[in-house]
Length: 343
Image 1 (cartoon, one colour):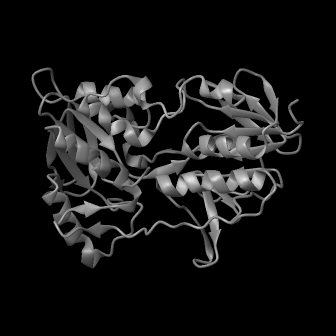
Image 2 (cartoon, rainbow, N blue to C red):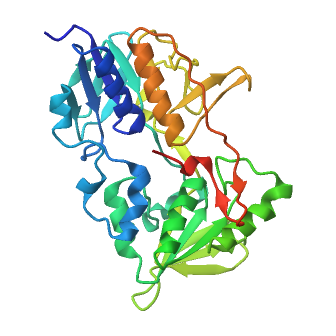
């Protein structure tokens, strides 16, 4: 018979799914519910650049077969949006007016693309790359041997750029102070890293801030990007890569301590005894840094899911990153980020 403990996981990504898997192994009889705002089963978003290599069926990206959830007695609630968390009553309010009770809660809602305020009016002219559906939209919008304009150029965007170039397209990176995010690059070293990008086949555009974006015409590239110095570039799509913002809007009235993300202990626990957080959504206390800080990349996020699961089932394990966060230039003069590494 199921135990009385109801573990609820918010988020259908790497941290949340790995946590659910570990919880099930450690507590075979408890209830586990994963709540996902998306429509698809769990798939590896790190593989999405493969849409440019002809991998166009979403089922090919699944980490688990559909029958996995039933075999593990895990309830997956898809297309379900949480609008409010009440820690006092241990309930989640869902957008379709249902209330769901939890005994132990893991918040692993991840992050979404950061858009500078000056570009918010042009969001409708930009393409994101955060799920399978929009990844396919980007792939379909880029003409054969076409051009992708990347604004900012964080390491997630640069990872995608490697595949886009390898499949015969052009990538222009419009530089910004968030280029290479989340790596922090000394100004004296910046030229060396930019040279590595050019060696990888990227075109560098260093003309200051974007002023605005316009739609092109039917006879040419679909997008025009105008800069404050009067210059412009044209391409098939414009993609913002200025880093991530934690997805925490639904926590506005929860009373959970937040800065940019959810503040948690090294055990990934919030100030509430029965609420944990993992992944891009949380800032973890670091005694070394004497501050709360984010940890990014597949390996960090997966480990957070595991640590949270252990602690939700009775342990007191501390998260420790094993990722060397240094951005490197290889012996071949190419860029390498540890955040591109995953199993």
